Image (cartoon, one colour):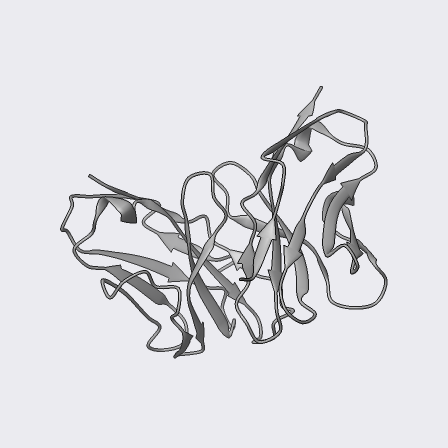
Length: 115
Length: 112
């Protein structure tokens, strides 16, 4: 596709429910990132994939958060037993290569509201 | 701890006037520096980056940024603001081999 696509655009979950957020990066992009953006804050790093390998998951806030990218393209961020503090916009970004100087291409995000 | 500071939550500028959005950082080593812009209901878009070389970097939509190593700053500038420049601007730094760190963002209002 032309850009990074995320779905769903909005998700409302009841506390305790499991959710899955999808990211379709730009075709051929090696690197994929997940960020969490709380209201009025900048994006906070969650996890990073290089192809199918999850190289950094240091930003995942708890073991309820899990991400995968099994074939090195589409990625899914799963949150188990959602809590109200999980409410945020979840952003996915990709870059062509693996260099630290690469620019990121962001999706529009998934806004998660946990009631 | 590594951090990025955008000291102004909001900046108001009259159309046609020059604008500056400030950014300072505290990271180890020589990081790569970025500016991204976020329009309503849109993802962040890359504006410009500093890797090495000339301290003045030119980017999209007429924006530029000045790297100052001694002050660890990377302020975003534009000589003449447009109403369409109104958006949320994020400064970001990335130490080589490490994760990217974003500032909290500065909301820019260009007044007609």
